[in-house]
Image (tube, rainbow, N blue to C red):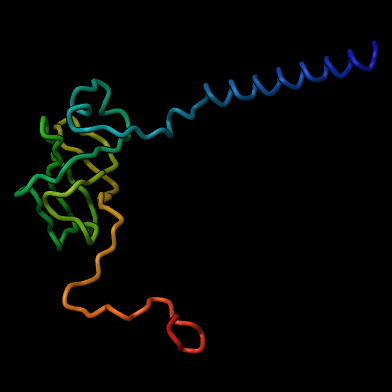
Length: 150
């Protein structure tokens, strides 16, 4: 065998091993760690929705927010304007959580139709607004080390 044939055979072998490794990774148990993002309508339409951990996104329905400070249980409904799902979460709600805003919860749909979540995330824009009533003109956020404003 010549050197060129050895190099070509080595290259083909390396590509074959790499493709086999990629195939094993792709078809292994990685599917168990995937979390799907669904709307309430999509969640209720899926036949196997109770078997998987999913992220459910929608708007918090006005009038549905209940938080028991003693038991640390948060309850509310999420809607996508077509369907709504009742959500129960153990723990404190995020600071920005309120009715009428977008929220994403992660958890499982129970047999009774209640979604038990382990995590609540609030959707919000990233635009900062200074608190009202505070004078901010001429004030800079990054003073230099010697105490002067830049």
